[in-house]
Amino acid sequence: MGQKAARSAAGKVHSSARGASAGGSRRVLGDNHPEALSSASRLAADLRELGQYQQARALDEDTLTRRRRVLGDDHPDTLTSANNLAADLRALGQHEQT
Image (cartoon, rainbow, N blue to C red):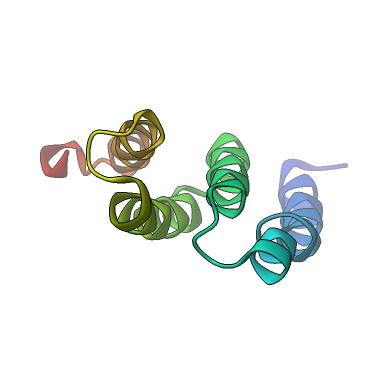
């Protein structure tokens, strides 16, 4: 399988996984439940690993915003989300925003 086909297949898998992981957690636990936020963070990490940096960035920005609101600025999970967003920005060549 070529690289383009592999990326397309991976994208389809992750689109399906989104409903089963982050989206599924949100439906069961609520948008701001810590486990739903952790699922969203893990999905963003998978997207980042696949090179889908813009999608990872969008999800990490949302997760960081919600973690700040729910957990506070100094919570370890909030700080992890800030670090993940910085990694996305760096990968996108937007490191001056970090």
